[in-house]
Amino acid sequence: MLKQAIKQKIKSSNYLVIITLMTFSTGILALDSDKEAEFSLEGDNFKNSPAIEGGLTQIKYWGNVSINQGTLKINSDDAIVFNDSEGVSKVLLTGKPVTMEQIVDVEFGKIDIVANEIDYRVAEDMLYMSGSVLIKSKIQGEMSGEKITMNLKTKEIKGEKSDNQRVKLIIKPKSK
Image 1 (tube, rainbow, N blue to C red):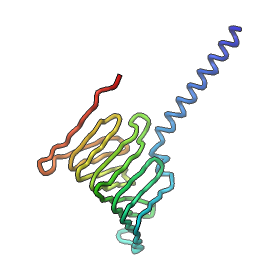
Image 2: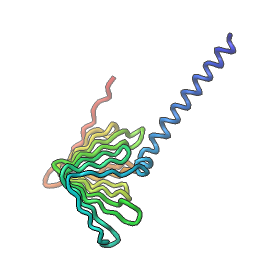
Image 3: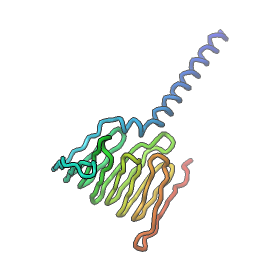
Image 4: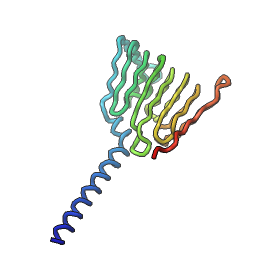
């Protein structure tokens, strides 16, 4: 009877370890898996400029634009997608507003972004945001300002004063 109880306890512990490892490994690879996911872009209008300028081609979408790639979801009025030999290198998004969400990793969780313009440097994992920027995240709280940059790899966020508007950070108290 005691042997059976011990075996059951070990079996339960093994499942817990496996589930924990799966959760962390999936979360840690969220951005990597996003980059490997299909890049889907839709809009009311489309223009492809196949002429290569500086090694880049441009695709312009306007009117109710949506982009999906794994956990990444973006909605904007306009989008210009820059492609090079490696694939999508940059996406310039404008709108009133542009909205973006993405799960960064298990620890950081999901970020929600609202801005008038987002310059997403895909190859560099950098976001350059401007115009009434608001970023919400579980770890960083709420940050707002006119110009904010975010490194999606290091999770470093920087804001700078613009036109006498300071950068604001609100950290909510932990709930009990």
